[in-house]
Length: 242
Image (tube, rainbow, N blue to C red; front, side, top):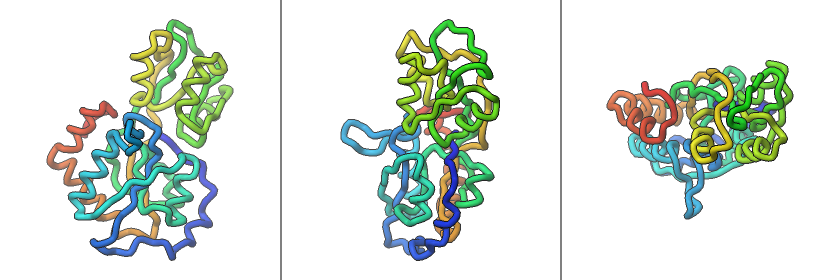
């Protein structure tokens, strides 16, 4: 999944914005709203997708009133730490780097394969190609590590546009995100072997909000136990079930 570039440890001092443990207050869930099928904005401008359904069910089980907030990906962790919302549920992989700044629940998806999407029929050597990826993601870091030429874009749609415009040989992103483009555009296809990056997606919280994190963690476990989480994973086709 995706990784944020972190330079935000100082923001962790913003304790005055910490979640006040109260059933009556509204919990604000921060998401990107631009990464289908995990999260996106529907025709009415409302947050929709896999994580909208998961998040709403988790709030119900935790007996919390929740509202959704959208935030650009490259500042989603800093704005959590500074108090603009209370949790992140945005296709965010659990990583050691992030855990230096925020805390996570257990994962609510398995690690999703990352795939290379390029022009149909091309013979791609990823290590010697120009690869597009969204800024601050696990995929962008992987491209840089393997020595390929990396083109970074702030929005995932822009990475697809770079391939279509011939600026990049391929885009590396979550296969769940890329599949619809491969299915809908005959000129695009998966052009190299999938790779596994990250350790699954979890919800992110300020380190000071342990009680709130525990409520959501217990709700995630209950969805795993009764099979309802697997049902949503299958519905939205976001990877392997638990």
